[in-house]
Image (cartoon, rainbow, N blue to C red; front, side, top):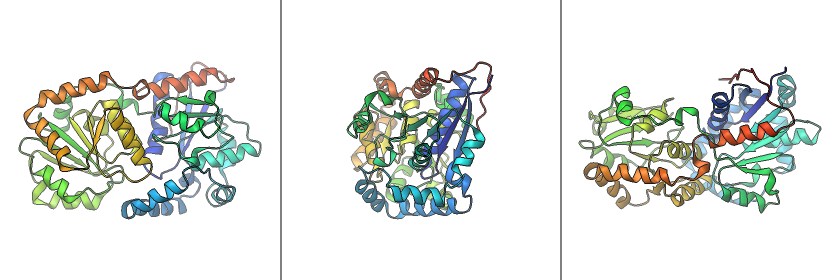
Length: 388
């Protein structure tokens, strides 16, 4: 019997889109070993020279001029990609996209980024007969995600579903699945054991993350945190910002046995599990992973646009606060150093009230249910292969 093939397309504009694709693929593997998955960053795959240059320019814009990013996000909020933009994307980046699909012969395509979503939609208008699912990887619904050729939308919350319905998308084609997180985030692990494994002290711990690109934090904030290292352990995870990591490691302020300065890591689930508080930029994927691990979050300077919407959602759910004034950080430093049991009780209440679509395996369960309803049934005895 022929294997059922799921092809997941993403792009590297922000680390969360591709992480979501791999998380869903790995989750399907864990839940049902009868599906074959392939994850591809389509633009980089088809244009390995031009793609990274565009990504680098985007990253620099986000770092240096975040307000510009927010302005563009808002100005185009209600608009899908126009025909000219779709044509340019197709000719410059995705001219061979149809060949990739013909070669891999998927039974289902899932897009976790608007660009490949628009390209596959264009191919469907030209006669491609493959179901297209669109997985929106934020807690908002920008117009660029919307295309009439999409068969099913997978969204993070009921609020995002309502936003899509206001754009005349029928309710039955919108499914509140939540955003997938990697199975590594599904299982609870004792923080004491994780701290020992990672070489940390068993004491109140704060994880500070700059996002996958390691966007820089305010130096005043970093210094204030470092000044509390005698009674609170600090883990600085600065992602791919190698310059900042080197500067911090050479700064005497951060040379303390309770301070750990890290670059890019693949064991974020362990770092979150070993920590009591997460200070982070509110990227959709990081926030979802933090919620899966049940760690309270403080959100630092959200980039205007989708990060602001992510921030609003998690604050409204009682899973975090905006770090917009010194009193917010002071409160948590006091709790961790003097009232640690209150922090543990807060976490227990937080997890008891979490919404169903934030449960770690909810998205995978929903997608499996949808796959089982597809006209092509999932065969048994098929091994899942996730392209790394």
